[in-house]
Image (cartoon, rainbow, N blue to C red; front, top):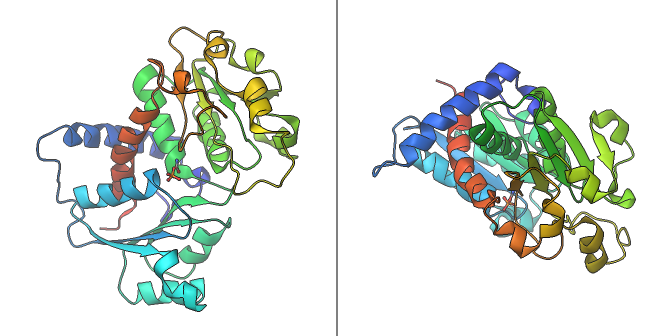
Length: 302
Ligand code: CP
């Protein structure tokens, strides 16, 4: 195992399966009346979130607490960054407090690398710009693996804002690695120019994209990252690319509906689909806790 988890490229197929198996063990522990284990007693985990987050931040925090670590919460909006302190000096300040694992989210791609180059411990990327979100990909894979057992040959369709999504890049990477077939569906204006390098099929026709899908993953509209004018409006986007019951009806009967969250109801996914029996959006959150415990377990140094 490498020291840092910045992208899915940092993991081999065997290491990914080891994270899955250990995640399953932690999920069992989390179903017990007493959910706390001593694995990270004496370790300190710094949560450095320079960009908003609900799921990722809270599940990393709870994972650390369940494993008995001390947790240091850094929030950019209430820090000395507001007094013009640089990211590097902020990291040096935290490093002086002897942090063992840094969990980093930032709006710019590459910031987790900068942190990794300036600290002694490990860095886990909790999402950097439109670049990478490896822990989301691991929990997405876990959710699919738990339901299907076998990953090779599964048909996974990913729909929505492909251009600005970090989740799609990490999901494609992990699904390709595990032998699943990935199809993307997005408007032409939200298709990355480098799409031919992604090793996936793509189409602009949603009905065609979901045909024979075992899994459909909706992507959030990344409004905070988008240039203006890429889609006419959200109503039209929903008409052609929104996950609606009549669209999902073209997929396999037991298709899993997934979304990393937060969801924009009525934009990339209709409420009826998000709340349907096929939806595992809340299970993804539950699994995220077990998978992030497993990630800590694999990346903490003895
Ligand atoms: N999926 C995800 O990263 O959600 P948050 O932005 O709430 O962490």
